[in-house]
Length: 157
Length: 88
Figure (tube, each protein chain N blue to C red):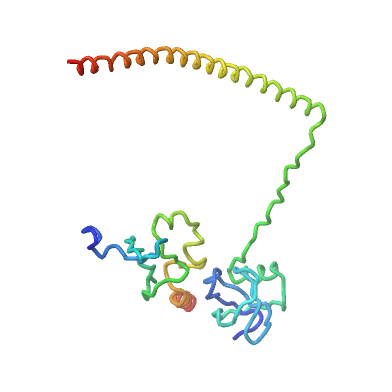
């Protein structure tokens, strides 16, 4: 049953249910298959041989297998070749560009400086306010001084 | 005596060793039942038994074997099905 050119169905794995031709017999257990499945080594127990047999050479290429399978009415697996992607190479900056970069950075620094000054000014104002509060605080302190006087008066009563 | 709401069997009990050295009883949510084969009913391998929110986060290839009828039939039943188809 197991011979070169025999059409089989694969039973196990991700290629299960797909048809393939036996290309080579490697061992008493293993064979090489190709067709709808990927071209790979396969255990005989994972193959179900069908009635059809195709005349192909031992270790024939995928294209030859595809042609042989077309006559039976089975389409072989087609892999799309991956398009080569070119990585964008980083170019070194010219000295002129570097100078421009520095100038831009300096501009940004100039933008940030006045804000810092404002914050300082605010702090000054807050300090002044605090000082004002401190003045106010003194007044309640005076009240406190007045308060103990009253209980003292009560005590007198 | 546990709280009244914890006395149902919808929650599973877990004994946890706490840093003080005691064992405390924690109540945890039960996991869903393992996935079953649609034909013979055996539990499927390669399908994780996780909460739905955790399954949603996982990629598709983590949740089922990469073969026809993966995550639906067990490997034996899948082979039988393909054999039947090929012999027709």
